[in-house]
Image (cartoon, rainbow, N blue to C red):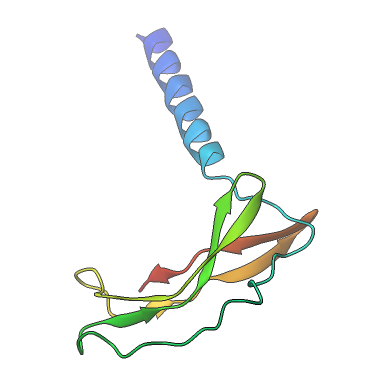
Length: 101
């Protein structure tokens, strides 16, 4: 029984590590810049319920690509969009995506 518990524990630990590793951030030495051709103009909200989701970055391969802002209806129980931001750690910068709060 102890051996079975040990095997189950190790497999759960390995699974948790694998899931955490799949969520790894892309580290860049030079932050990408918004394309110069992009002009950010916020159109009128489609309804009073809509919240503006600010532009940001999406990881793609070994870099990030620009994502324009848009209007969205918040998920149930949430009302505020918290903008994403750049964070720094040894070796470079990485994008922490926005989220609903």
